[in-house]
Length: 394
Ligand SMILES: Cc1cc2nc3c(=O)[nH]c(=O)nc-3n(C[C@H](O)[C@H](O)[C@H](O)COP(=O)(O)O)c2cc1C
Ligand SMILES: [Fe+2]
Ligand SMILES: [Fe+2]
Image (cartoon, rainbow, N blue to C red; front, side, top):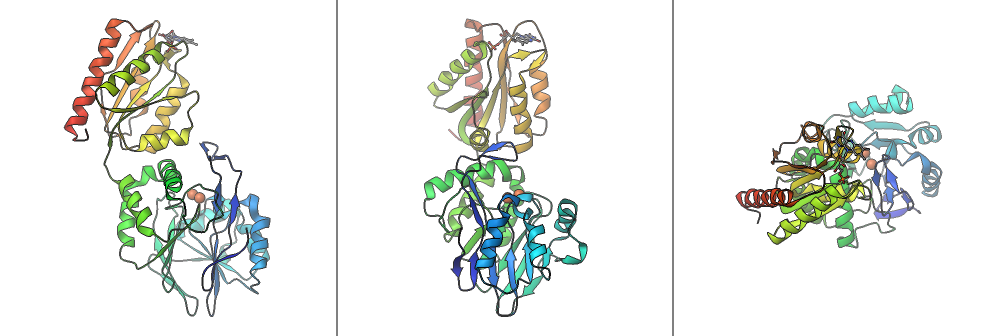
């Protein structure tokens, strides 16, 4: 993508990855992504903010060449993850006088990932500034959104916050700014659930901190920029809050239809009680979509048959993912079917030990569901209804 001006002497020089389909070998990207990089030309110094994925280093270097700058003095590295740092080695080679400016933790990671020579790195602390002549950068050390190294760079005179992964969206678009809010909202929520959800309290802390800064534009490292900052700050406040919705998500797997029948019955039973429900067949579900729906559902019901004395591996995988992503759910239940014995309920319960949730009474039955099983599921639906009532979300 060509070099594009954001405001006077501030340019977008990143790349668009239209075709990327998966991130971290885990998360499907239905709309590709972008790796954003920004160039700021001050009256005395020129800086680049973040680089791009290794696969796009040629396009990136071409962009820099097109910008017709004779030199770049610094590259600010807000985050060491390879989707941003992958092209740093080639950059350092082609700009032998440029120095990296980054956090202490990021320095350590850059050295271990790319063997960057130490003398090329300048470490900055929280609140430190860097003068470019007529422009000033300020660094906010903001660990854990989403790595220990993350920081935010603030361009004072042009009132721009360069937030790197924070506020990003995996969304390949040629638009510099968000121009399709409904579509962007879904992709940003999905991204939040996949990447920022485990760090909700940090997100709120940093949003609060940013309120002490005057800015009009947020420039993340994935997806379009924001010139309506309240749109994304409000969304992040809501997603990071403890608020949940009157919704039940039922990720399920079923080999021979027994557990599936239970899921269908429970779905109807909850719907008839005025509770929103979304069953997900784990054989087909898109992990990112599921993560997004898990974000603010009040209740999660994991449904699995017993396989070799424990949960089906697909249900175990879901429990593992929920345990690390830490959705906001207040209640979790386990349902399913077994043939002769095992410890599926206990194993699944153990797998979600990090979640601060109330575990509901399981409905775990032998074989295909009968009248008694349906009664058990109706009781579970009643219990969920009461819990949601107590939470005032009905
Ligand atoms: C590969 C395989 C392994 C199984 N291992 C166990 C087991 O260890 N313990 C058990 O109680 N049932 C076991 N079962 C039986 C299923 O749990 C039982 O048939 C259950 O009703 C299947 O539910 P579904 O129809 O939702 O797949 C196994 C079934 C299969 C296909
Ligand atoms: Fe990252
Ligand atoms: Fe990233």
